[in-house]
Image (tube, rainbow, N blue to C red; front, side, top):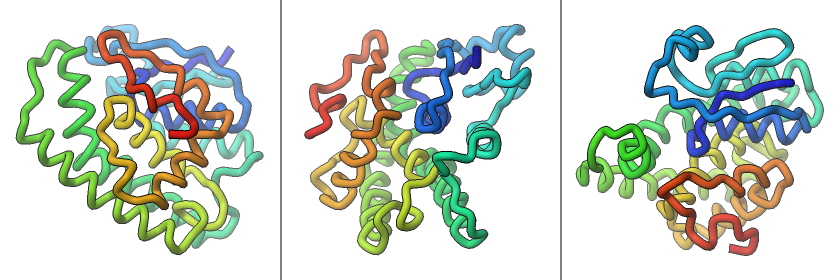
Length: 221
């Protein structure tokens, strides 16, 4: 049985979960308190990060590398285009969300509001929360600009870029930190991707002490 060591609200874990679910690859989810840095977990990934996927006798780390491995062993349905230029654009946007968006938004909102409490690291810093709330507006506008020109973020078909963005936004939506009224095009994109069967398990997530808002699992939000 494939096994994914994860944290429910981690966008990096969610991206891997979405890729696996889209390709109908069954996996056992194991919640990992990675911040405790247990010797057992460090044995699986010396970097001390999630996700970690055990699959085909391998222990795989780093979400982008995991997703590309999944794509190579299970190429259908495709989440990466066949043309080099299109593949580049997918990789560029995956990096955008996992690096820039994560640094400017996710780490400032989700990590301050949720992770600090779960890890026992104190209270949110209002300065960071304000910075994240400001930065997300820029990113939503950028997504709207992309979607004004394309059916999906990276082109005319859904790709890993959409899952990377949706992984971050869904985690932030769990704590009501996304203003869906800011851009109707982005809202429609999220409603479309949120309705996919691959999203069902994510919409069922529950984090102790942090109940999701009523609209979180509502497909007609």
